[in-house]
Image (cartoon, rainbow, N blue to C red; front, side, top):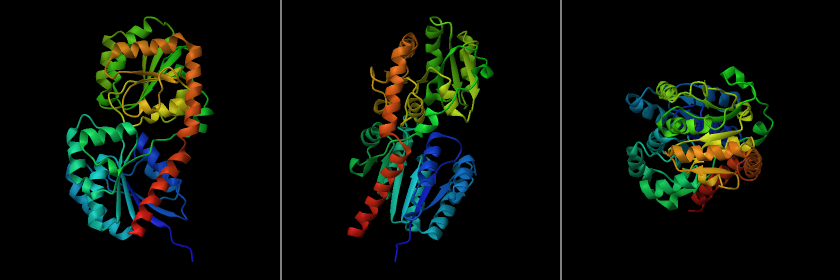
Length: 374
């Protein structure tokens, strides 16, 4: 008689479009249903990836949290739902879901709790304090990069014996086969060389640093334009900064865009000016598209970009170094193209969705095997 599938609960703060949300969706929807029975719990409202998951026959429960005041209600509801579902493993992603999930999981009697740590949070240090104080409730911390693991062990104080690193992944074929968009719809002249950056417009992402670096680039290359894809709380301030720097005709604001593969195909390279990260999906996407990358040397990028081989790494919060990296990319298209091809090869070998799923399945099996051997 065959064994029934193991019930596994996944938790995440929200299911709006975003890198972590997309990775969780790909992982959960590709699990073998003969071995795993997944259910996704979301603290926030019903959103884009909730609908994607349901279309892929994955049950989703959203708690529609509205800030800190919702925490007691969500904790009670999540505990109740976990008692009904009775999973063997609860695997939560992102800080708020991690914190509430580990408490709800223990109250509901879930045997094994995993914490998915997706970023090295340097701005809100109290996140790390709460992670450390409640980490006794967690069986394993799953970090998205070695850089994040090092940060959590050295700066936050988590036990390295409880740490596993499973990097992000990307659908290589989607980016390889994408055709360029017509960038003139964003006000970019036809035939221009486009440097693209994609991310939420907030302090962490360092768009202000990019705008400080941009004048040195556009003054040397009359055909280079910057396309900034994304939205966020700092958009108005950043647009004003660009205006003050005289960049109105050379920096173009695309807002949120869903067709990242075609946008990436329209560029000559990606710039990632972040102050800190986890393992930036957008760098993996650029690599999959065969585009060279100029990125700040932060968590995750060190594990993807090898300077002089497949891209450029520069110090964070350093406009001059960022400008020099971008000038190097634009100045030598042949070298940049070679870097892009090498990156594409790296993605195909190391960072596929199949690898992401298999690495997680191996971890789940290991945890269950250890429990059965006790």
